[in-house]
Length: 148
Image 1 (tube, rainbow, N blue to C red):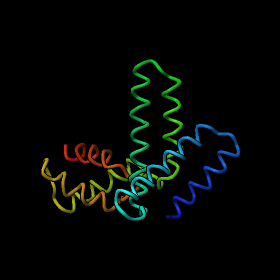
Image 2 (tube, rainbow, N blue to C red):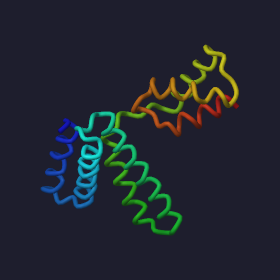
Image 3 (spheres, rainbow, N blue to C red):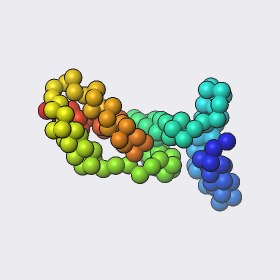
Image 4 (cartoon, rainbow, N blue to C red):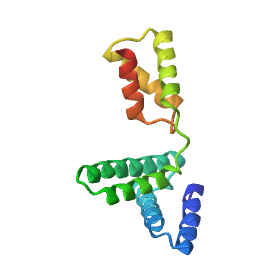
């Protein structure tokens, strides 16, 4: 398995010894997701696949936290946010929105892009440039703001 998998296994053992039940359940779930993906693709999960699994887990937990909060279940929302934070620690440092905006503005000026049809080329360029360190939804939102 990949080094990410081995790192998570080591951290799981540490969390088990420390009695951190929430971390144990979160890390076990992540390890199962990685195993399931390896079975699904018929090969070891590479770094890009690992990051995709972690991003999905973070997104799901943030959405759940939002729903719990709307339902008045603050304690469950906080639990989901702690789990999202734990999973987020496995992601590369995220690029700031200011850096994304600057890169998009630079691309728009250099390529003379405008209008809604420019979203595709901007997304392709920015997802390549910021692979793993920026969320596609954030890039899309900023691109739409820049394009007006």
